[in-house]
Image 1 (cartoon, rainbow, N blue to C red):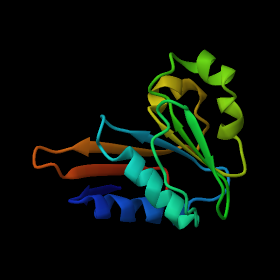
Image 2 (cartoon, one colour):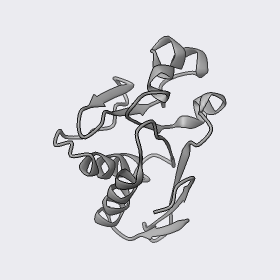
Image 3 (spheres, rainbow, N blue to C red):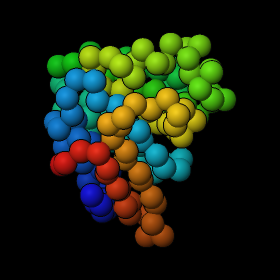
Length: 139
């Protein structure tokens, strides 16, 4: 399912819809270049879960855990080298949790992503709008 986002608000709203549609145990792969809106989608999911904390990209901490109507694990794997390092930080536990796992740069652990992973691909267009392709869930 493809969406066009012309603003941060559009992207945030899509994230909210995604969060409302997710069930416990959902894994969301967020893919796109730097600045494409992956963290904005995560903010929208967090809002849908009633999380009031500020959501920031966990580039240096790798994982941020938030409590809402269900736990949300926000991971940024930009700095890891691959599946082995992901296992060393305990990442696999979050893939099979009772919360929602959002993973930026999930390409680095593609082989570990469970069946049923929801893929959100964000592409920046020349006019700065975003084409957001969501696969694996109906919104």
